[in-house]
Image (cartoon, rainbow, N blue to C red; front, side, top):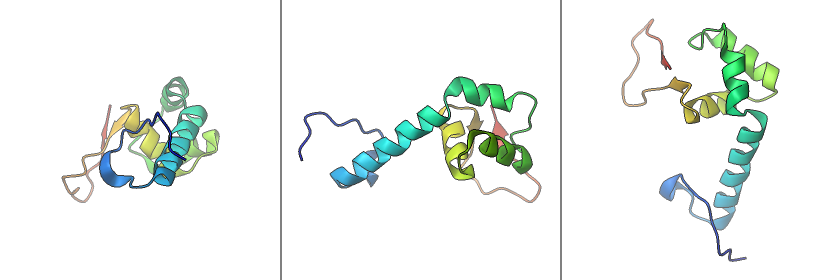
Length: 95
């Protein structure tokens, strides 16, 4: 099925229409389950460089830790520098 409108923001990684639909469904689910206001509410009083705190938030929102991390990056609550390797004991940057 050819659609007149396609919303896609991730570049060339999504090759097929099915890939695009899957990405859109995942993005929609993330926005629905983890709206920005809810993420900001959940992070209050927590250290987002502490995995225990991140897992607690994921449990509260009933999402996987990877979905939570992805969504936190997308709403710019956390920043993970993918080009630099972390040294032992170094933590991620939290906005």
